[in-house]
Amino acid sequence: MFILMAVVFVLGYLAIALEHPIRINKAASAILTGAVVWAILMLGRDAVFHGDPAHAEPDGLVHHLLEHLGDIASILFFLMGAMTIVELVDVHEGFRVITDRISATKKVPLLWIISLITFFLSAALDNLTTTIVMCALLRKLIKDKHDLWMFTGMVVIAANAGGAWSPIGDVTTIMLWVKGQVTTVNIIVKLIVPSLVCLVLPLLWLGRSLKGHVERPDALVGHGHHGGGVTAGERVAVFALGVGALLFVPVFKAFTHLPPFMGVMLGLGVLWVYTEIIHMRHGVDQRGHLMVVAVIRRIDLPSVLFFLGILVAVAGLQVAGHLTLLAQTLDRTLGDVYLINSAIGVLSAIVDNVPLVAAAQGMYPMSQYPSDHIFWELLAFCAGTGGSMLIIGSAAGVAAMGIMHIDFIWYLKRMAFPAALGYVGGILCFWLLWG
Image 1 (cartoon, helix red, strand yellow):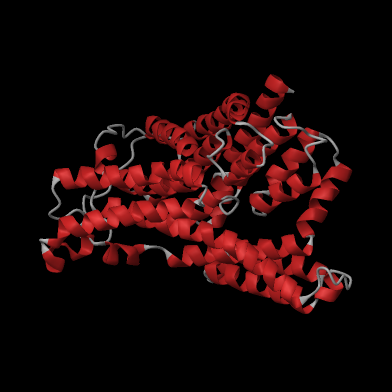
Image 2 (cartoon, rainbow, N blue to C red):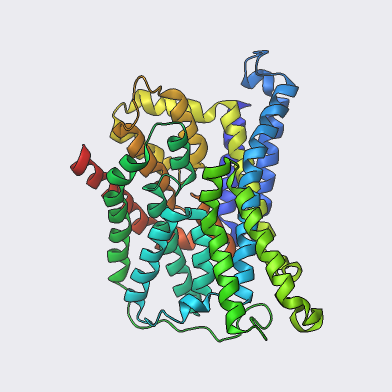
């Protein structure tokens, strides 16, 4: 049963990767994989846990499932709240505040501008929120699908690189920061240069083959007539409230210690009330398409379900002990700090980086690797940036895949090598600076 769970996960992963050839939506494959993995775990619990009563009781496994579901739900609600805020700003043409000021249409300068904005914004927000915002911006800047996908792929790389050096930029860095394995100033000092290298190398590589100008989309591309009847003042106000709500999330978390999705809910609530007030006098007939009730229908629910399925499946492998076994195998066969963390980063492109980092935190006590040891710093970098090598290797990639409908195989062919180049370059840079 233990092996069967891994086989089912691999088959589900292949179905997700081959979504277009087999013509089955990736969300269906992910949901099915998550359900089957847990069904096998429950039905074969005696074989998986060798009859250990401390782990093999049905109620105990259900408790583990619900515990993981709580963490997963907080991510999903955060994702849905952030996507709603971004769509609300988008439908009011709020992103024109930025896009009207980006005059570059040559592909290479535009790629650098977008990537650098993403890199630093990701450190202030987080890589998931930043990717959602930047995807909305890209839809306003680029018409051609191939160019749009390529720029989005670079956004994923930039968001993950930017999130790695900030204590609040990536969920895995947050995990290490909260448990005291890294401190704020030290993680910034040690990782900002390797993270920049992780960004710059893919930019240089992609820039070699980029020529010409991007074509801007038509003014009214999308769902309905965006911003119809909205004044310039209302447009700026919605943009300021929307971006302010997202920037407020880490501040809200720091002061209240509540999970980030609560901060997003607060921001969405304020923006919802404001938009209802400004549109109330115009009525549903004139501005119904600008209200949250209409905008929320644009949220890509299949992508949310895909996220749910893949995270539930990984949680099943974590509970069964697959990830712990994997971490122990890496420790036994590799031994070296750099090799272990490099392998964890590569694996994080296949398996979610959160349980991998959690397994590493459980395996290596702080008596072995104290606070701000290079092991934890390198783990933050590798787990944060390694996922860029596959489109479903990070939360940022999954969000981009859902919003832009990027094909898994296309990303593998076009973006995996630049991402890997930046990943390896960042590790070498870290070694040269701090090794």
